[in-house]
Structures are given as structure tokens and as C-alpha cells.
Image: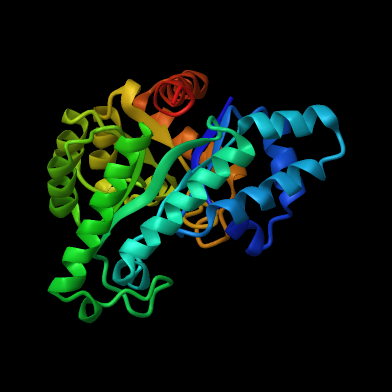
Amino acid sequence: MLSDTHFHFLHTCECGADPVELLSAMADDNYYFAMDAGTHADGLLEHAAFAYSAINAVKDEKTAEKAKNMLYFSAGIWPAPEAIRERDAQMKILRGQIEEFRKTYGNDKLCCIGECGLDHHWNPSGVDGRSAEDFDRNMIEGEREMFLMQLELGREFDLPVMVHSRDAFEETLEVIKESGYNKGEIHCFSYDIEAAKAFLDLGWYIALGGGVTYTKKSKLAAMDELIRYIPDDLLLLETDAPYLAPVPFRGTTNSPLLIKHTYDFIASAKQIPVEILAENCNRNIDRLYKKC
């Protein structure tokens, strides 16, 4: 039973996936867990309504029930410049969305705060349009503060936090240590073994996605070493769909249905059967997310 701990369901469907067909296929493939990850303060209720509308449109009752049981949600604010500038207001909106979601859907379906964190990957022409010129000292401090606010929100609700950290390892670690809240995962991990050790020593889970399958031959040994270094009881797998489709689909729109290729890659590096890898990851999901 495979799981995808991070994908963006609405956005994946906006990129061409049929919502009913996608959820039905995941249910028919017996996915154990699938988390629709949040990125905007006001997005949670819209995403939940869209997902449950798709589930309600599934004709087969058993398939619909399996889709409902596997689907979970997170709520958070990605570090976009406009959100950072209005972080106090954004946090109030996020809190309101969480409270309304819990009234409508219950407490158990929202199992995570995030994704949230720090992003210092400067690429103005990229999909995120991030430019170093936009991040002066005030913006950098505001980004840290908004991340810290969401770590504190996780503590308040006793929920794990899904951390986005890109080209910002040292700063991310500093904010986490400042908060003293060590419950969650480092999403789409893209650093080296030393960085992994720093997070793992604090009790954070490491989530790997399709990006690991892009490894060049010259760096494959280092990637294998990293994958083997991550303890079986602190590893999660994800797609980040519609982004980061794994090889052999790199460059296309990603889907949770493609996560099997990431499982294959990581199982090979760990030299264990895919079934064992899946069992390990699902136990980790139980521990981190499904018992919150």
C-alpha cells in the first residue's frame, strides 16, 4: 500500500488531471494515505470542498469510501513575498480556516500545519518568480517570523509541521531551534547528509520526492549514501504533484500515481523490497500524522 505525504490536489487537476479519475485510481490501487498540502492562508476550505466534491462524484461506493479514508489535509502559508508582508493578517485567516474546517469535517482530517518555511532560491524567471532583490533585511526577518508563527501554531494545535526549506538550511535550522518545537517533516529534502543529521537529531522526519531520481551518475553514490543514512523510522515519500515528476516522466505534470517510481528508486538504494519500504513509511505516517 503506497502513500503520498504531499501533493496539491486542486493544482494537479488544474494542470489536466481529472479529479474523480485520479482519486478513484488511487483508491483502486489501495493507497494508504494521501495528503493534500496547503500553501495559502485562505486555501484550506476551497481545497477540501473541491476534494470532497470529487469523492462524492465517484460512482462506486466502496471506491468513494476508500478515497475518503485515504485523504488528509494540511494548512499552511508558503513563504511568498505578498504573504510575508501581510503575515499577521495571513495568520488570522489561516486560523479561521482551520477552525471552520474542523467544524465542517472534524478534527482528524487536518493532520498538519504547512507547508511553511524558508525559500532562498533566487530565480526570477522561474515558476515562483523569486528574486534576491525582493528579499531585503525586513523581508528576510518577516519570512523567519512567519515560519516561526506557524511552528508555534503547530505547537498550539499539537500538530506536526511540514517544512519547506530550499537553499536555506542554516536559517531553517536556526528558526526550528528557536521555536523548540520538533514535530514534523522536512518536505522535499534537498540537502546533504550533514544537514539530514542535523534535522534527524532533533527528531524531524525526512520526506523524499521525485527529485532524488534526477541524480547524475557522478553523484549517485552520494545519493544512495544519503538514502541509506535516513533511518527507516524517520522516512516519508511524496510527489509534490503537479511538480517534480520522477524519472522516466521528468518534465511532465506529476501525479500521485507516479510515486511508485520514487518507491522503486529508494527501495533499490536501501536494498529492500518495495513492500517493506511501503510498510515502514506507513508506520511512520501512523506515528506522525494519523494519530494527531
